[in-house]
Length: 242
Image (cartoon, rainbow, N blue to C red; front, side, top):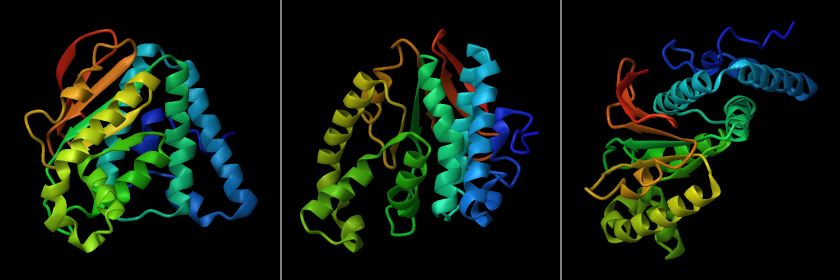
């Protein structure tokens, strides 16, 4: 019996239990061949769950899963090789299979983070590692602004002071990255930490494309909060609680 086979596919990322990823500790503590075996069992479990899900249930699971990933990322400062491998074996495998079924997920977030060193720590540092390990492109104008600053030789410690000088160009760049994701049918998380009236126009422009599951979060990522969800075969269904 596969001991890594959980009752529901969403159990692998359930952020409402206080232990968002039940096999993190198991993966992290295992070494060498033991870790490789556990990761393979997780991949096999995800594959089997996806195989038996209807398209409707698959899209519902994708919505819950990506929102739980975001909630978890907002409640941890941890990221190491074990977590990276767990996210790849679970979420990464799920998203690859989601693509094979003809779907793509666009998770759009309008959440404010204070323009302080502590406030931007996760969006600039943890989130890029977290979501890319999960098989998602991570697009954030403020994070792109940081890269533009680095290219100009500006130290990371000056980010908060210099952001206003770079964010307009960074939003232009983020729109170009979104265009690429849309044309290549890539999954992504798009987050603007300090949105404007035009921040999300490019991201929402793909919501009517075939196979696109669009999720919009503008409530804080806490238990009982809601997202708007645009399923591939129907219009926005209103607030969906996760």
